[in-house]
Image (cartoon, rainbow, N blue to C red):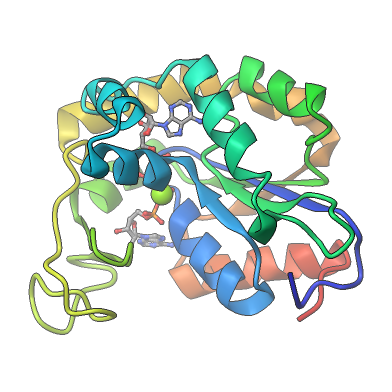
Length: 227
Ligand code: AP5
Ligand code: MG
């Protein structure tokens, strides 16, 4: 990894409700700091599109707005963080996790494997803004780029600005499922705020995307990250 030489161990976690802008912020941080970004949602969707056993199992939970079982998720992340792009030159783990951990047992699993975070970024957005963000989101399955019909419209309707692929409406981005995802966040994920306590940096994420990114970058710089 390049760009963040001022710290040896860089294990960062992005936490936030569905639609808080985790993927959008992560893209900005990757462009700026060159981090190893792992979105468990993206990994599961890729596995599902590829028709793997894990992907097909995960899809049955995702389409209902429910979390995928912890043992499946822990195995997925455990294997992925061992790959070279998530290791510093000295072999220590370096990553930006987006959407993991999402439960207390998942946080325990990181801890037990020596992968506890150095920094936890919490993107704070009220629930009413979220339904609007997610119901208007359009994603590109080919390159992972994310648009929004209102807040980040594509130049040509339905076509990804970055790669020209056809944009889709994610199968879990419909209002009834969004509400179930919000419930899952409240019940299963929000206890992480207490778990990580003083380590959490809370960022006001109900602002324009560039303002959210600037706020996150300011936090990272306070923690010694430099581009
Ligand atoms: P996942 O894909 O992680 O979904 P999520 O957490 O619900 O979050 P999203 O990806 O929907 O939103 P985001 O915060 O990335 O926002 P984005 O930047 O796209 O997980 C999907 C499912 O997989 C889960 O429900 C679960 O089933 C399963 N899963 C994944 N990880 C798991 C785990 N660890 N354990 C168990 N199950 C797991 O932005 C959203 C939209 O808003 C975009 O259109 C964007 O353009 C727009 N936008 C972004 N920022 C702003 C802004 N500041 N202002 C206005 N619009 C904005
Ligand atoms: Mg995302």
